[in-house]
Amino acid sequence: MSDSSPDRPTAPVLDVWCELQCPDCRSSLDDLRALRARYGDRLELRLRHFPLEKHKHAFAGAQAAEEAFEQGQGWPYVEAVLGRVEELGRKGEPFLVEAAGELGLDTEEFDTALVDGRHILIVDADQAEGKAIGVTGTPTYVIGGERLDGGKSQEGLRERIEEIADRLLAEQSA
Image (cartoon, rainbow, N blue to C red; front, side):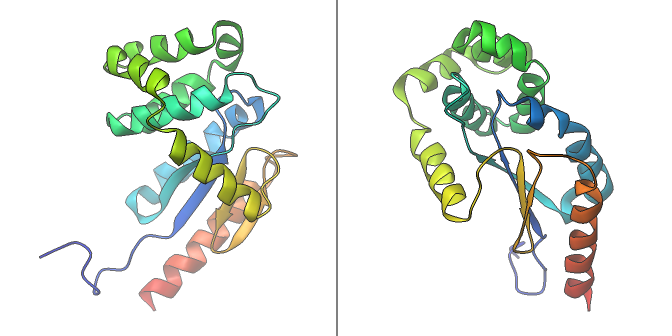
């Protein structure tokens, strides 16, 4: 029997519009960890790419994150790179490959992915969708049809996300 049977409700989705060279996204890491700890697989966190032009390595970072997800280490990679945004700013793409190696990912495949652009369409589609729904900066969260802008302040955002997630989960079980 498939897990996608109609009897099994799908988890609410929290789209996290982010870019890996953004200091504000780094400041959101604690909230994202807390949300994963609280909800586990009852809340699906999805990384959505919104590379900002002001950050030179953001587009490459988005592609690298996609490669990390493909290799099964997406969130650990995102956290590792966001934790060192200044280093990404200084070193650029070589740092993205270095961070992959530190997590035991296939660095040759990483390097190739950055050169051949295999993940560009995903990044472009995310960015286009973000623009279409009014994302202007990062991090921005979308849950239950509500957009929350974390680029101005993280203050109170986790609590608001939890309120919406709890409501969505209660609606599912009703």
